[in-house]
Amino acid sequence: MQHLSTWKRILTVTLAAALMIGALSGCGGAKKDAGAKAAPVAAGAKVKINFPTASASGALYAVGAAITNNWNKTIPTVNASSQASAGGIANLNMVSEGEAQVSIAISSNVYQCLNGTDSFKGHAYKDLKAIAGLYMNPNQVVVTDKSGIKTLVDVKGKHFAVASAGSSVYNECAAHFTTAGLKFPDDMKAEYITFTDAADMLQNGSIDGAWIMSGAPASAVAQALTAKCHLIGISDDLIAKLQAKYPWYAKYTIPAGTYPNQDQPVNTSAIKMVMFCRGDLNEDLVYKMTKAFWENIDQLGKSQKNLKGLKPADAVKDIANVPLHPGAIKYYKEIGVLK
Image 1: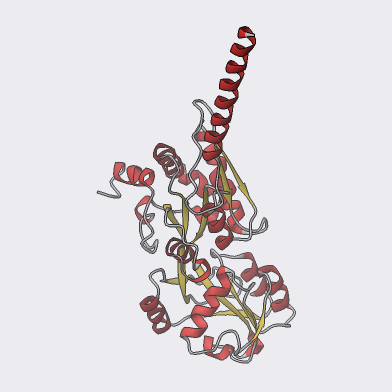
Image 2: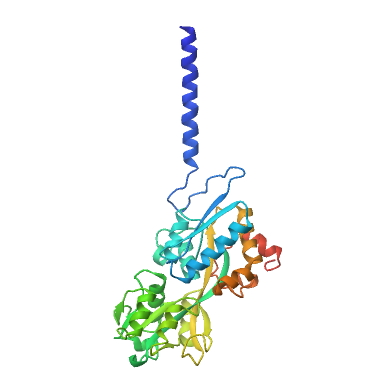
């Protein structure tokens, strides 16, 4: 009986220990809230980096693939993979919730996520950090020659593609048209379609214009400008009004000859694309990812035109005051970009 009692005590202690271990391991798992912390990684294990981008046919998808391939080749401890997504706002939500670790979005959306405004009202992710400001994403307003549209105000009453409601592009339309004095979207016949569909409809003349936000040259714009369409500019006065309201806008010129039948430069507004990450990513890991990105930027630029000519000195500018990750700061200080 004494022997049996001893075994009962051993089994009880073992069971309690197992339950305690299970409870502790559960605390380390990813959580579906903005404050979720990354689980510790075992020594020698590769860190998985999930990198959502945008639609598989878009430029951002290819940019993300190039960056993750670079990390996989140059950082032995990283297992990075890019994936198609619904774009910037969805990317920020995925990073906030711990479903992804690194991604790209326009600086305005990153700022809004950090501060819990606009599309992110009520669910700010305060631990969002920037790795690098990348390339400028210009607003490109394409109209048919027959539409008579010369300024944003002229879009009133016209059939105009504004992308999907709640998307980054839709929000750009809202900001610009409202600042120009129009009631958006009520003052136009809004069409909620993709860039590809917009280009097709511009070609066949079934819409008067479309708002396309993408690195230049953009395939949808090039397609439209081969079929009696042209770009219209956004005035300096309107850009100044936008800059007074929002901390992320910059002036941008689309050089002449960027597109077919484009003989003159086009003045417009632009927002910088920002590569961002979760704030709880390991500092040394982010340092290595930042370093690998910039040390291989020439090669990345050869494979992706949007990354061509990028410089580390510009990576900390025009990012809407979004704080840099400590790992990125360490690298920029090391090369003299930051003091």
